[in-house]
Each structure stands twice: as C-alpha cells, then as structure tokens.
Image 1 (cartoon, rainbow, N blue to C red):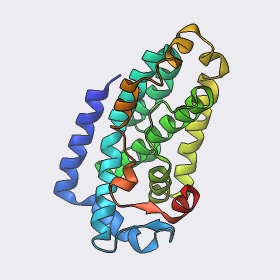
Image 2 (cartoon, helix red, strand yellow):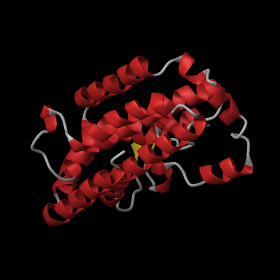
Image 3 (cartoon, rainbow, N blue to C red):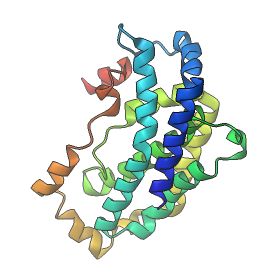
Image 4 (cartoon, rainbow, N blue to C red):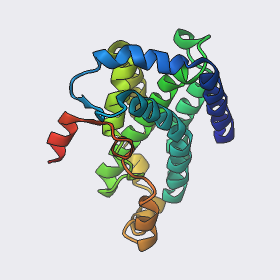
Length: 217
C-alpha cells in the first residue's frame, strides 16, 4: 500500500491550510448549523472542531496500514487489501466531484471513506471473531464527519463502503485454516497491549454525540 504517499499528501494539505485557513473558514460557517446532538466543549468550540477534523484526517493512513497488517496476520490479506485499496486510491485519485479541490477541506471526504471502510471490515471481524479488527471506536467520529461533509455526499460514500464489502468479503473469507489459527491469538496479552494504542478519537478530542452517550450508557 502507498501509505507514505498518503501521509505526504496530508502533510501538503496541512501546509496549504496553514497558508489559507480554508478548512477553518468552512468549519466556522458550519459551526452555528451543526446538529444539536454534536457536543463541543464550551471553551474553544471552534478550536476543538478544527483539531477533531485534522486528527480524523491524520489517522486515516495509519488506520489503513494497521488494518492491512492485522489482515495479513489473520491470513486474509488477499481478501481485505482490495477493500483498503479503494480508500487509498480515493486519496490519490479523487473522484470528479471533488476534482480540483485542495487542502484539508478536500481530504475530509477521503478520510471519511477510509474510516468507513475500516468500520465495515471491523463489523465483519466482530461477527466472526467476537472482537474487532482494530479496537478503535470510530462510530461517533464517523457520524460527526458525516454531518460535516453533508448528508447527500456522505451517503454516497457510505454506499461505496457497503458495496465494497459485499463484493469482496463474505463468510467463506473467514473459513480458512489460517483464520482459525489467528483466532487463537486474539486473547493473548500482546494483542491486548497493542489495542491500547487505539483510544476513541472523538473522546480524546472532546467532541461527541449526545445520542452516542445515551446508547453507551
């Protein structure tokens, strides 16, 4: 996977943002119109939202790389890598609808698809292993990003994620001997220690959903 290229693309977008403030201006316009369920800290709500979006984008390449590494350990890299490549190619060659856009403002869309694809794969892992591929709870972060992107386009990206999994992964993908061997390692202390690297992104940054808290309670 071309993870280094994705990271460089994001670094360039950060430099563009530092020069133009394009994403900051967009979020300033959106802030008064955010869904009331989105909770921001009373102090520096704008700053918290900016930091959330930047971290959400920064985390996408690492998430794709980690998902690919774990899939390799589980013996199903050949099934999962094509799914992750969709997100990678979306970064490198954006669709026509966002063609010509630059900076972090554009990369929010790409990052959302990456996060959603890994979320979909995670759901399959939970179904078959009773544990996630990566124990990163992106549900709340993805719902917030969905709203920032806009309902119509975010729904289109959701459809890409759903169809990608339907076409490339099925129950047979998880019925291999290598997968059974991997299943035995899931309860190891080393696995548990590695999972501590992935705290909830939205909780880390002080951004949340009232609905998500009610469901968690």
